[in-house]
Image (cartoon, rainbow, N blue to C red; front, side, top):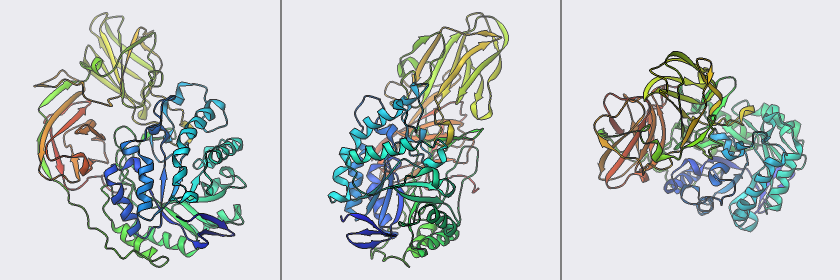
Length: 582
């Protein structure tokens, strides 16, 4: 593919003017067997480019480990598919990406250092960044447009102006690392209009992010950057959802009008998102602006392509808008894909989580509870256990919980403490001296934006009962990366969190949606693939199941239900329930 250059106020590709018309598509939120479909539909909507983040935390889950680049993390394959579709790529390697993604893409092991200053020139942070780029960037060189590949430009960091850190030396060092790593295509930064002055560098192209009022925002960009192409690097066509809120939507007609306004100005654009996808497993992020708010599993984002990759009204309106500025492909847009419906799947086998915790993680003993980061753990749960020193009623007090603790005495549930509600104390009764106290703590998503990125997980500081500090703790990590060691049986289990297992048969696999009426809160797997979290709190009341996860014949479903269910039955339905529009 030809090389992108900047000439005056224009992008040029192979010497010809280029108006970049792009859409964001995150390979790590889409099943890899569906990448080609999503890229094809991007081109059919009229896009000439796709924009993609790179999540450091998934690619390097261990500090000194090699990069993970297989399966759903095969970034080179994704770039090859984009090139095969004739699409250019805007690459955004971070190291921080935000994206409503767990910790904004920063790996949890960074937080094992309590003094680390993230997103600054602090050597404790920059040294692992340099090591990561040292592994990643050489793998991407042959995918650059300067070498005939699809990557035409690379972003430096992400919305750094909003961080409030103002560490220009950090941004300069990132530029140097990218150049040393062979990234010889144009570099750019992206910031909201009010942050443009603080987020950029003199010799790096600035771009602006916004939802509406395009002319004014582009004017702010031109004021900050008197020459160079105008570009909106994130045109927010929708929004994300949080547990306990509504389903965020943005009117298609309004968004199409803003897209038209951008293109009519001659500006380039990246639609965030073209296709949102899904926060599979435990990968959702969270916000904390005084109240901790975890993001839901679906990242549908009210995008032109919905969570299953089907065109929406927004797709067609955007396509019609783009047609006034660029030729559309002649091929027809595929219709919505077939969806599978299979009601009434009985989950007849059960297994207590507390009883089998030792099968799922190796406990460590200490005088205090250990955080997830101290345990070398990214996602999932930690089971904390100790004994109560006295009989009778008392108050259990925590210094803090991150993010949700279910409390048990001798295996019986006695209450729940949530970070979201600032809960730190619980009244309970100890049946006898030496009664067993257990707290199952869930990481509901590390903060991905703002000042709260140092968001370690687990129990904070000392824990006391009736004024006496509790010591001699066992901390068992439960990452639940595999369920192979869970031992299921028929019939009831003791009170508390339990795995529920069932099977169902499929003649012809297709996309579907898992609905769980009557279930409370937990996580779901089908054939070992982690679909994500469910929660009756809503707004989301279904989980997207990619067709490639299913197989012909017998399939397995496992739910970890944290509280309880009266009738353990699940349903596969042909449409989602993302909750009432907000």
